[in-house]
Length: 246
Ligand SMILES: Nc1ncnc2c1ncn2[C@@H]1O[C@H](COP(=O)(O)OP(=O)(O)OP(=O)(O)O)[C@@H](O)[C@H]1O
Ligand SMILES: [Mg+2]
Image 1 (cartoon, rainbow, N blue to C red):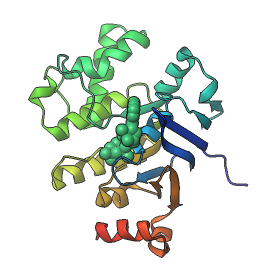
Image 2 (image 1 turned 90 degrees about the vertical axis):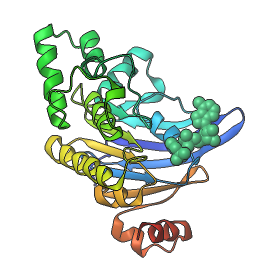
Image 3 (image 1 turned 180 degrees about the vertical axis):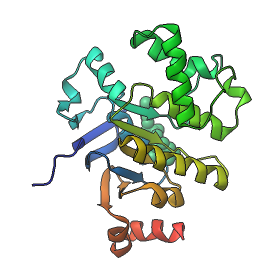
Image 4 (image 1 turned 60 degrees about the horizontal axis):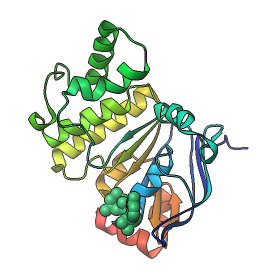
């Protein structure tokens, strides 16, 4: 029997103000695997991602992370899940009024019981992982878009997560910087071995980093498979996506 997936979504439904967005999403992400979620803008990719660490609650269906069914957890328990499942938000989500050090370290300071020296070393290590050594004192406004994404990534790695969720990690970056971010995502995943879910409509990036691909459309996963299976697919939307990537 195949090993059970680390992230499992079953029949996930979510609506906002009576408007259905997710209409029964099923998705498996194996331990250590990188799954890319593709889809046209507004199809609910960010909404799906936010269910995977309990930022949103399903109307119906189940979301499992490891042995935990997120639907049933209270906020304290969800906080523990969020330490294990780091998230890089679509717009970076950095606090403009805080330095890089504070942005990366504030959750650690509150929840990891480190003294200031340990905290300093931990933040320095996280910044080294994303190749931003020595940037502690800078403010987000002093960073390029690519650097801001790196800081957001360092923050997502703060609690040594078992999974990382990326919402459009390369959108809005020029192709060279996007390629650097892709390399970083791939290298970190190899080095640290965590499970990744990457939402993007940047097809080049998708094929550079994904082990498997899932296409979200009309509230469901319309196709899921490897790059090879995607190329062999006769699904029209999948074909359109592939052509756009060439
Ligand atoms: N908190 C919310 N309240 C109300 N509606 C929401 C909320 N979050 C998302 N939506 C709606 O859900 C739909 C899907 O949004 P979502 O942000 O997941 O799309 P997306 O696939 O990530 O798009 P993009 O590629 O542009 O980021 C949109 O119609 C959006 O307006
Ligand atoms: Mg989105």
